[in-house]
Length: 76
Image 1 (cartoon, rainbow, N blue to C red):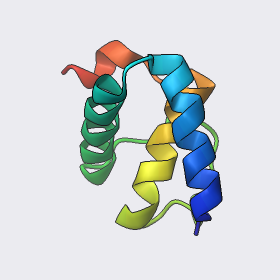
Image 2 (image 1 turned 30 degrees about the vertical axis):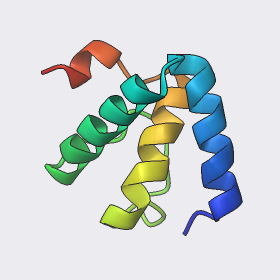
Image 3 (image 1 turned 60 degrees about the vertical axis):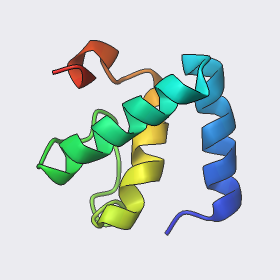
């Protein structure tokens, strides 16, 4: 499980990448839905660490922060 302080840091860093908290909210929620439907992570992660819906939020933030996620992919 990811600690709350780590999640807050991920959120701050993601806001530097996306620049809009509203767009960030939309991107993260859409990415979480994709992961729930079986999409594979766009970054290297431990499958045991990110295996439940509670871990999808920090996973989506990490993908945005690392820039490995194609933001156009989310629009589909």
